[in-house]
Structure formats: structure tokens, C-alpha cells
Amino acid sequence: MSPEFEHRLNQLLDRLEPLLPPTVIDVDWNCDVAALWTRHPLGGRLTPIAPRDALTLEDLLGIARQKRELMANTRAFLAGKPANHALLWGARGTGKSSLVRALLNTLGHEGLRLIQIDRHDLPALPSLVAELAHQPHRFIVYCDDLSFEGSDDAYKALKSVLDGTLTGPPENVLLYATSNRRHLLPEQMSDNLDTHIVDGELHHGDAVEEKISLSDRFGLWLAFHPFNQDAYLETCQHWVEWRLGEGSFDEAARGEALRYSTQRGVRSGRAAWQFANMWAGQKTLED
Image 1: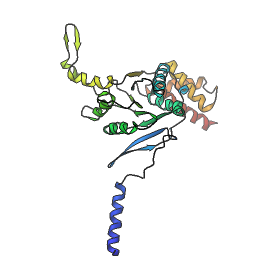
Image 2: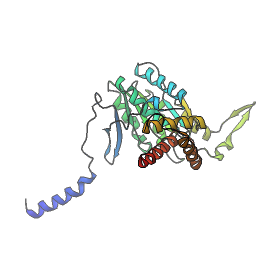
Image 3: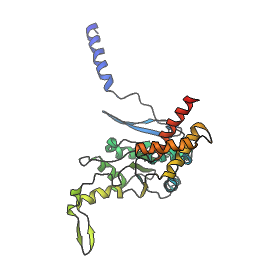
Image 4: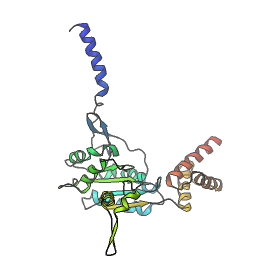
């Protein structure tokens, strides 16, 4: 091989290498409890990830009913009993994604495995669940902040996996999703133009039926609403005392917590966590 040819070959390899998938890290489901589906121009793969934090169900306040119902559904699934796909929808920052994380931290040692997939990667969902069907473990495939625009066809793959094929999803896979929209698709005023009343009954047009049909395929709907003041302050107290110790949520902290929520125009678990970080940071610097 001539030196010139070898040089040109090395240049070609240098240009091709960035286009190749990263080195594959195999998921060992006996040890790994979570994985991320990552997209690549040549396909996609599962990458094992460690749980983001040690968040527990006890850390999530103001959503007792949602915790109870999702836990019951997931435990039934782990026991091989009938269970439903779940849609967690509602106000931002109220604990939808945190509840899924806390669920994994609570039930991971009981055999629960979690795979997160991005909304833009949903066309790969049918092949992903088909691959999981041959695994001995039980999986929740999770899509965070799920919503679609009017021209987005990715929702068709989701509909198919949920309840649109002859076989349906495998017995060891459930789909959980979080969204700020109950019906996942944008709803326009024009969609209602075909709605009509027949013998006193309201009949939606095809556009509305199409949008409702997607969320209808989730058997469990859990609604999350903005916190009232008491729930917000209780959550602030929990996280401030988690940061600074018991008794650290005094009247000064309470007053600042109320001002913080007023300035941001929101009362939620996320706002309470953010306030606790700010307050604890300031107090630590003062001390």
C-alpha cells in the first residue's frame, strides 16, 4: 500500500467515523432498571441509564389519589394481572414525570423496568415493543411530555401499539405517558364545525373523533391540577426541611414561599422544589 493511498484511506475513515453509531453498551436487565432509546441515522438502540435520583413516593405531596391509582395499576402489571396503559395529564410542574421516576425507585427491586422514548422516536415503537416481547422482565415504555402537532404522524405508531393491531402490545409491556394535553393533539375551533345533534344526542365530527380516539386508548387517565395554597406550602416545607433540617421552614420562609409563587404566577410541586433550592442556597451562604 502506497503512503499516499494510506493517507487518503485514513482521511476517509476520519470522515466516516462521526457517522457511525457510538460503541454499543448492552443492557443487562438483571442489573439495569432503566434504559433510554436513542436514535441514530442508522437506526436506534437501548442505552442503560442510572435512575436520575432517589425520589420516593413519600416525597410527592398533593397527589395522593394519583399515586395510589398508578401504584395499584403497576403492581397488578408486575403480578401478571390485567393492567392499563396510563396517561398522566394536567398542569405543568404538578408531579407527573416525578411520579413515574418515584415509581421506578420504589418498584425497581420488584422487577419493574423502565424505557424512556422521545416523542420524535415513536415510529420505532412497534419494533421496540416487539423486541421486548422476548424478554423475561416486565417493562413500562415511558414517553414524557407527549403531544402532537396537526401535521405530525408519529401518533399513528402510538395508536397502533396501544390498541390498533391484531396482536396488540406484548403481555410484558405497558405504555405510560405524561402530557399537558388531555387529548394529546391540538384542538382547533374548526374541528367542531362538523359537530351536530341527532335526536338530542351530540355527535362529534371526524376531526374531533380522531383526536379523542388516541387518548381513549389509555385505559387509565390521571388528572393533575394546580396546587392550592396549603398543598404548595406543605410541599415547600417538605423540601426546605429536606435541605436544611427539621424546623427550618419558619415564618420567614413561609412568607418568601408565598411571594415566590405570586411572582411566578404558579403553585406547583416544581415551584416548591425551586423555591426550596433558592431558600436553602441563600441560608447556607448567610450561615
